[in-house]
Length: 177
Image (cartoon, rainbow, N blue to C red; front, top):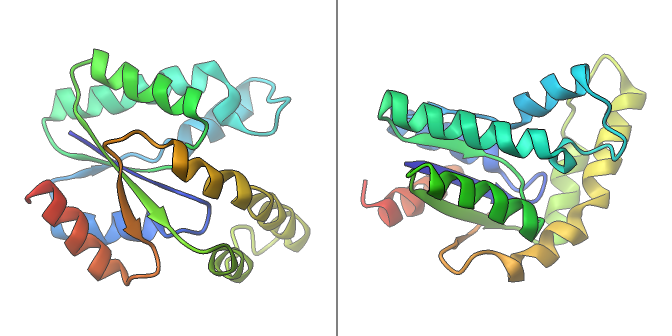
């Protein structure tokens, strides 16, 4: 099974996955962003977002399905994926591979997202790049929040302002684990 944790940048996806992983030690963590980083080094990315690359979406499906089927363990996936076409493409591909997906979306108010984004540093040795990344994430808040209404019907929405422990309790209760 794939446990996909979705939400805006800064919503707490990676933190929640780390909390769940601590409670499900057999689970694998697959971060599709790593696929994007690899592709950025190999192919041109004119849009600036690797999610726009069809190859990224195909590789995410292939790797996630492979991890779930070959290892027979739950796979935790922290990844912002809000464009309906891309979400359908990935989730339909996983369904075609016979891999069930449980989709969670963290809802967080805009002001809280902006504060979280502003508080983090992804490239501390390069302050200009760090601010560029934060600005890009902030610029995506509206798109991510608007996408909440277009999420698949089976999406479980969680209050991203809860603590990671509370969120993990809710997620695991939903999965009956």
